[in-house]
Image (cartoon, rainbow, N blue to C red):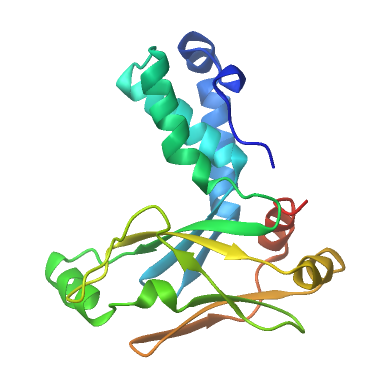
Length: 194
């Protein structure tokens, strides 16, 4: 998949005009591509459209017109655009109560290395977390991680032929599996594969 370029972005004026429609589409797209693993772990499978929306929003909020600022946003969000052989996701650990969150993040050290996808009839593939920088310490994990799930040609072929896919976590403090992804979620994810 092609990365987002400066030339492919809307000007701030054009984005402002089209924003209500783009925002509504982004809300729907994010809803479809969100997978909840239990009550506290959420995976948002990113794509080019969602990252483009995020870049445009950042430029709008920060009123960024300069080339350097625009390039900084492209550099920040382009790594989350799938490459055609993988899925990319933002993983969030969500605990509304600050005390509960602090305890949970200490118990869940290493959870980012225990998130997996399993295509029907294929071995599990674990996400590669935080390739840009380390977000965890020996004492606690971060509440947000960025992940890449690299798929084999057989996995891609199976998905395109109609195989199901499971998403799960096998951390000892948070064992959780989603048996079957909703059809619209899986169909949207398959569009990331070239």
